[in-house]
Image 1: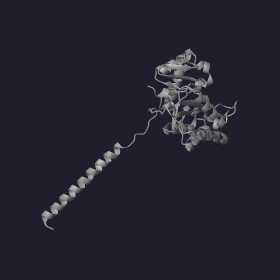
Image 2: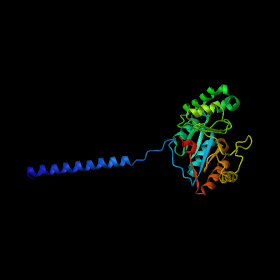
Image 3: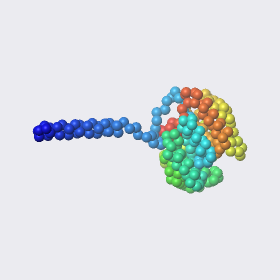
Length: 275
């Protein structure tokens, strides 16, 4: 091969490699722009007025094995739920791992704030007394910090009150603690119906079919706190035994048969999404 021919061939090969690299760069840039950012806790979504939004909110986490059982049921059913964490329940490495998993498993699960001490260990009159406002506030702030709670969403221990952007209603509408939390930008979430506890037993009071009946009645009456949205309160500990975990699965399975029903985390509740 003559020298000029060899030089020409090298130039052509160089040009081909440069074009390929340029195409690869463009492809990489194009691919990167198509990557969908992972949803973050608190990101708003568009709610469909033709749907019925169901917010399962479980209090006092972590309470193994109940918390673990509930998580397993929710995963198997492919639905979303919110766990309201209590700091002094997070004792030992196993419970810490449970809280970590709830925090890290968004968007399926959301970790929210239920106070560090559960209202000074259920001493509610003290917790909500005006003289203890700062102490109770610091209890929520401590819980947020220690559990690394990613959203400013609170459920009050032992109290069904709602607060958002200055609109407060419920049992403690005039309470200084609730007023202060609201002014600080926290959203306080109560509940529409409770899957209650059977006396002192760690067992649900109502059957799955009874809870479905109650839920449908609330929607039919239009008596939920917000239209087309219902917040259900229960507790992790009620589902420790297999028979009760099975009842939870049955409850969800029945609700899933109605195509209007959508399960969401509480950061997508109407008043929580309102800025």
